[in-house]
Length: 321
Ligand code: AMP
Ligand code: MG
Image (tube, rainbow, N blue to C red; front, side, top):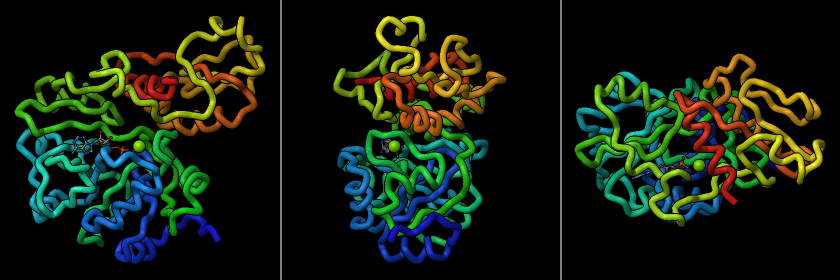
């Protein structure tokens, strides 16, 4: 029988100590966690998610001091950011230590680390003497979960426990910055804005490693990701009316509804045009739109400021065919 999500931290801890997987809430999205020091437990993450073995995992803990004990040290510029933004939606890629099994980093000699900002998960992490390796708690390629119920629907029969911490407050995955070269490099847009990071750093990030649809390093790196089952596009509804009847179109708008579409098929992410609110609701709304009896989901292009860039990144990847 599937176990319902709950808030039992001791049960979560016991299962993790036994090498089992537990889904955990964070402020970004729900994670599928394993003891990062236990290679067999980490292997279960890859198999349950159907995640390619070459895609490394982020490890999570509650304190920088613990990382140091495990031989992982943040360089100066990362420490400056950590002071301001950790716990929070920022991931640091730094030199790996021998404590971390190769399966966690997919063979890289760097490791991605984050201190998530969620009260329940921080209380769990405080009690653990190992970091948690945790990618998003969804089958690889699909939309990331932002509620315990989302995890339950997709992975409930495959994992022993889901820790329920309510809806995720940020709603987008963490921003990832690499510190392996002298100049910090942005690897993924996410829940912390580039503007905020650069203002604290006092310098601009190297953006040449960022892989997006405008600037793919190679076409093969343009991965379909965060995807609903339905066809999804970014654009104007008017351009699709010749090919789809209005009742077969769902729309995801930033702030303004369409007058000529049925209300039931329209999702407005933030009537006040607040990008943080839009980010928080995005994945839940994509799931809802996917469940409607429609043939296409049309999303707005979001403003290219603040979290609008990360939202556009996720929408573009969701639209890759
Ligand atoms: P996910 O946990 O699904 O949000 O994915 C984590 C992402 O972190 C991966 O897709 C990588 O892009 C990135 N990542 C994790 N570890 C490393 C690393 N050692 N070097 C570069 N990127 C990493
Ligand atoms: Mg993911």
